[in-house]
Image 1: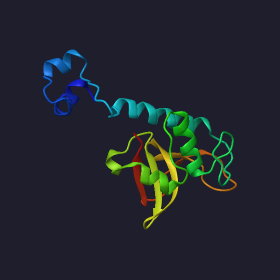
Image 2: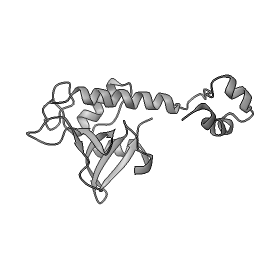
Image 3: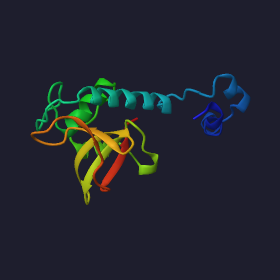
Image 4: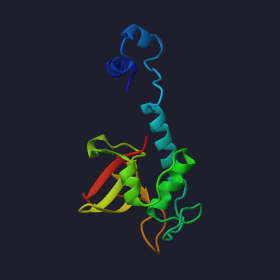
Length: 157
């Protein structure tokens, strides 16, 4: 997104700031207590890279790293290393995330697998319909294509 594309939404947030003022400062402002899209994206990108760095680590139920992981343990570990704490389970992480549509998803968002209202698995969206995740006992952390449409997306901010 270019600075010019951000100006209208920034003007709404800034209230009295003019387009020229925003353009002069590079099109961004700081609002206390509100994370910028850039800082959230940076944190999510860090978490994604941390998860990818664990490629091949064995799955172990209940494990939160640094050498073994279950699904929510991998997301918890990755975001913690990126500077954001998450709750322990996939369902708790879903409840803590900002729910977004599949059209709004971007790399670093969480992907929650569900059956009805029951969330049973989580991974980190890598782009191109793929996630980094710790699948199951006997498997390892890996990049894999999302295999079902029964997913919800969440953004950690």
